[in-house]
Length: 140
Image 1 (tube, one colour):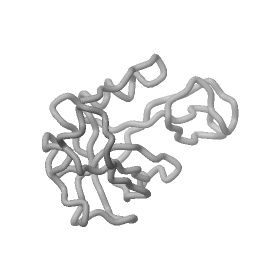
Image 2 (cartoon, rainbow, N blue to C red):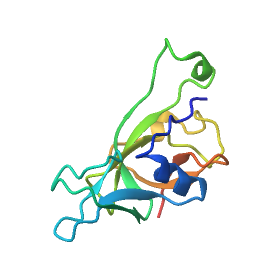
Image 3 (cartoon, one colour):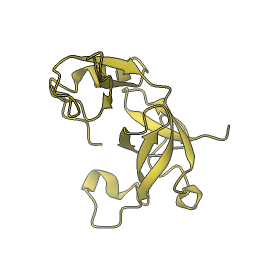
Image 4 (tube, helix red, strand yellow):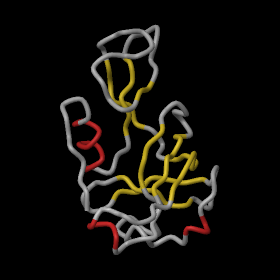
């Protein structure tokens, strides 16, 4: 399984995720306040270097998805077919996170029938035992 390469800008994201919290970086300049992802040192809207990590509610919708076909990376081939999704966060719609829709936080990547996926489907974040954010179909 691929693991993230953690840099200085993104380290807080993974520290919060390890605690089961979904947070995004946001500009801390009073006149701006825009959330941003991926994390970076400078706000792309106002140029400020001031930032903070804000909690988000972990709900969103599938903005896009793909079902990878062979050839696949060797570590993923036995889990095919699986999904890779782009999720637009409901309380930060400029933020889109990439992940997988699974049946339970520690379920395999192929645990959801691809026929159940739809653009616009509601999802909510869950974290596996290693703090990796994953997505569950939200029936609420």
